[in-house]
Each structure stands twice: as C-alpha cells, then as structure tokens.
Length: 308
Ligand SMILES: NC(=O)c1ccc[n+]([C@@H]2O[C@H](COP(=O)([O-])OP(=O)(O)OC[C@H]3O[C@@H](n4cnc5c(N)ncnc54)[C@H](O)[C@@H]3O)[C@@H](O)[C@H]2O)c1
Figure (tube, rainbow, N blue to C red):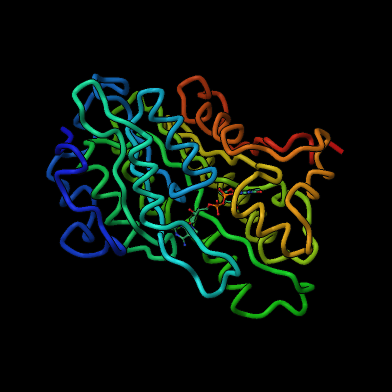
C-alpha cells in the first residue's frame, strides 16, 4: 500500500543512506514487495527513474506518470567538480514531481529521492524507500549520466576517466544491483523492465569523448549480459541509444568541441536535435507490456545518426 502523499513526509536533502533499510529491501520493507498481485491495479505500476531531475529522465518520469505509472524520481541534485557544467537541483527534481501530478485520490504520483548512482548504499536505500512507499517495483530506467572530455584519450586526466566510468557505467550497474532483486520479487507472471540510457556513442567512437564513449559501450555489454541472466524471469533488459538531444548534456557535449548544440545535428539524417520527449517515448514503450518480445537490444532514437 502507498504510505500517503509525498508532501506528508520530508523530501530527502542528501543521499538516502541512513537507517535500517540499508540492510536489504526484502528484510526490512514494511510492505513486502510482490504483495500486490496485479501489475495494473487501481494505483498503477511503479518505476524507479534515475537522472529524473531534468532532461531525458524528467521526460520519462512525466510521460510514465501521464500513463498511470507511479514514479520514484531519483537524482543526485548536487554539482560535481569533475564536470564542467551544473547538474540538476533539488528544486528541479521537486518540479518534476509536481509535474507528474496526482492520482484520482489526490496522492502524488511521484516521489523525489536524492541519491548518487555512484553510492551503492544510497541506491539500496532509495529502492527500499520506493518499495516501502509504493509497495512494488515494475520498471527501472537508468538515465543518470554525465559528459566530460575535450582531450585526446591518451591525455585524458584520471579524474575525467573515473567520473565517466563511475557515473555512466558503474552507476547503471549499481542501479541494477540495487533494483533487479525488487523487480524479481514481483509475482509471476512478471513484466519487469530494466532500461538503460546508452548513446549513439555506444556503437561509434567519439573523438575527445573517449571515456564517455567507452562507458556507453560498456553499458551495452552490461545490458546484454543482464538480459541473459534474466532470461525466463519475465524481466527484460534493454538499452535506448539517443543521438544528440536538446538537454544540458547535449549542450555540454557540443561545448567540448566549441560548437553550439545545433551544430551536432549535422550528424543526424534529420539535421535537427532530438527532444527529450522523443527519447522518453521509446523508453516508455520499452517499459510497457507491449515490449515483452524485446530484450538484450540496443534501440536507437538518434534521428538516423547511426544509419550511415
Ligand atoms: N543529451 C544527449 O545528447 C544524450 C545523447 C546520448 C545519450 N544521452 C544519455 O541520456 C541520459 C540522460 O541525459 P540528459 O541528456 O537528459 O542529460 P541531463 O544532464 O539533462 O540529465 C542528466 C541527469 O542525471 C543527473 N545525474 C548526473 N550524475 C548523477 C549521479 N552521479 N547520480 C544521480 N544522478 C546524476 C543530473 O543531475 C541530471 O538531472 C544520460 O545517460 C546520457 O548519457 C544523452
């Protein structure tokens, strides 16, 4: 059972890593996950979305909420000295929660949780809070990500290399590590979904963004491996690979080359930037029961960038 509107409890202002919930979702959850037998009950399925404070993750949260989902909206909400641009703020994350609206009973569809995807304890606690609050978990969207670079790969500083691998690759693995057990705790027949935001840079090299591209190639290997491990469970694992999208990260990627974001659209057959809602539409389809035949796939939404 949901434990009430979001506004009746404080929104975390720092990483969620205190209290007994760290010791395990199943052991400490006051409402055992899997106790809600129907995927689409009166209160709807539940998604855990990282990077939900803005951009593609925020668009996914809003679109899922608009189609009846409840959403744990997770974001670090803190800038990172390794990056050359600001990350989402707590206010932006709360605005996403507000935009997700309320259900027929006036209960907010989304729950804001601040957590860094590099912090396993924070992610474990965030999943525990999600299942405690909503009573179940049906889909995970690993959209948290960041970009940094500008040097040839052999001149890339350790700090940039580590930040790119830890946020973009290890962050997806840590999200799976925290959340896949909760997906598997749903009763059969399951319709669990793990969706990672990969990149066109998962299949092509990106000069002067080698660490980012290497991490995104790694996401593809991780997701394909997960798909094999989850075979037969009713839980799928897929990667969605955007081209350059009109977000803060898209702008930061262009800045690496001293370009405007629109200049990167020359790599798209469509010669235009993608909008976050276009990427979110594919992610939301993957989250839906209609995608049951798709697992271990890299699904491009790149305006034709990788078609030539
Ligand atoms: N924008 C593009 O052109 C583009 C292209 C290909 C792939 N992608 C991928 O799409 C995903 C979303 O990117 P976006 O364009 O919306 O970027 P964005 O910068 O607008 O949003 C990314 C979000 O992730 C959050 N975040 C960053 N580091 C985090 C951490 N350590 N823990 C938790 N949250 C963290 C940020 O605060 C931000 O809200 C990323 O994985 C990115 O690699 C984006």
